[in-house]
Image (tube, rainbow, N blue to C red; front, side, top):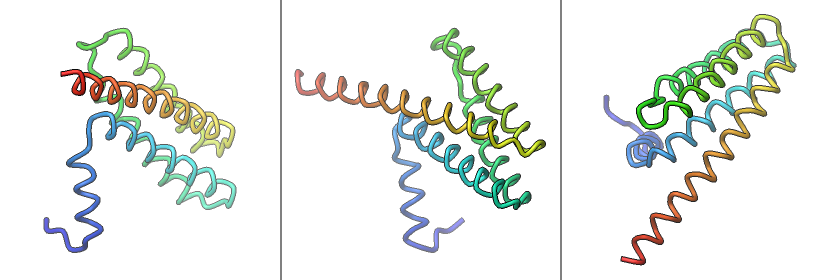
Length: 135
């Protein structure tokens, strides 16, 4: 596949050069964005677009689930898996029943998770830069 536009090249570079922490934040950003668009489409009664955006959000959550590594921290992986499963089920309920409250709950939880991971990523990066300066 050839990249035709500078924008496509830029986007590819963003993904290929991102740290694991940055990739995780990008995944959360995408899931939150798709869930918010789905909520807008739900209010507008555009069921096809609502469903498409909920599926995109679910795809990201499924990817987050599959990327968990229980060998690093079994308890954290199990807790996140349970939370991601809950979000996936809430999205299914939102889509089937046009449940805006379920969608709002998913957005709120994803937003909180994103903030926590952003703080953890910043802490790791700050700690790594302090180690480099000390050496």
